[in-house]
Length: 84
Image (tube, rainbow, N blue to C red; front, side, top):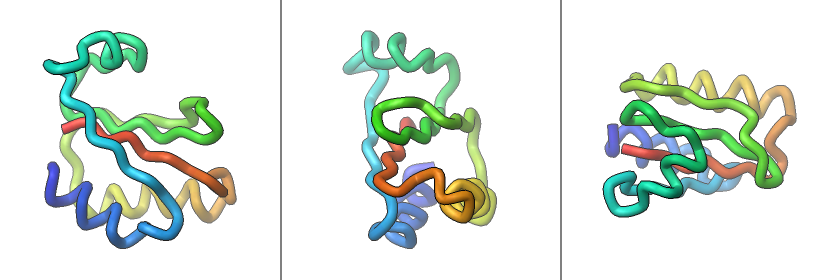
């Protein structure tokens, strides 16, 4: 998943921020975000979770997921913490 997330983050680099979290190194953060499966992608706006995606996905599906939110103008200063 890492290459897919990195490529997609690069594609949307002017619109999103990505953060990768190692749930083994930071189990409290994983618990705070209710990470139960790996990978989990959490889409946030203004510090609030607005959507999440659990499980491996293709770059096309990930781009479509992000584009849907961007086209709805839900993410003016968006963040995409990504968990691998």
